[in-house]
Figure 1 (spheres, rainbow, N blue to C red):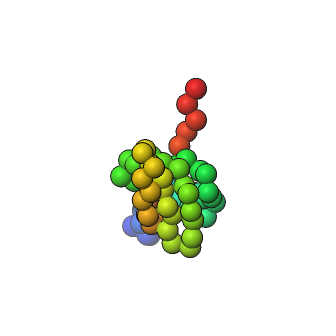
Figure 2 (figure 1 turned 60 degrees about the vertical axis):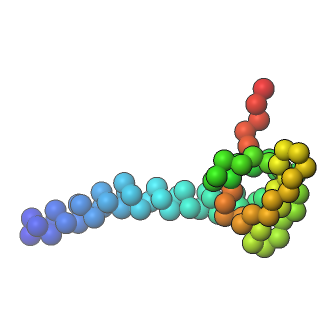
Length: 85
């Protein structure tokens, strides 16, 4: 009986320490990706900063320094660029 309680307790700890936070991060990232629009300043997973010029279902076109435009998978966006003052 004590073994069963111990396994249930370990499972609960595992869920609240690992699975639940990861699920929250996934939902937040999906929300960010679905809200991307033209003109947003973003940072990609590879550290590229730029302005979104076009968005379709799977890709974005990111304008970086020097009027260079890169076509990227939407999932590669890490975050919207923070405003600096």
